[in-house]
Length: 158
Image (cartoon, rainbow, N blue to C red):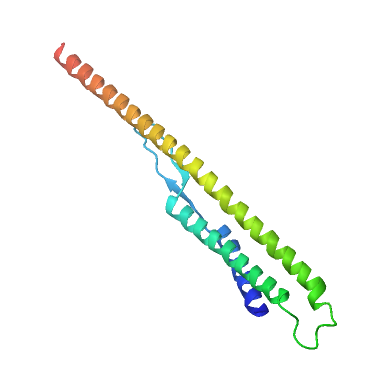
């Protein structure tokens, strides 16, 4: 059980580190007619994938910590009672398990609160961007129509 706990904890840490290495940015081309420059934005699918890998790494690490804690909190094997198996190791494992459980609970609570707030902010930003791009396109179309009208009038005027 101790070995399984350490393996789970190491796999969880590896997932957390790997999720930090995933590149989520992408280049979006601009529109020269509208004067919109190219920009670097986050790819929503890759951001979601990175968040899932990170959360699963946190859960795997927590499971490993709980396995290690449970292994040290169970009664000592025969012949080991006189050693510090049940005193310092049990206290350290219990503190580590409680801290990991509390930290993971706080992480989930903060994630839920942040996501609810972030979804609202993302919807507002998307609506503003849609409105702005629509206004820009309409203004450009009006300018083109006005230029074509002026050019047509200028060609008829001689």
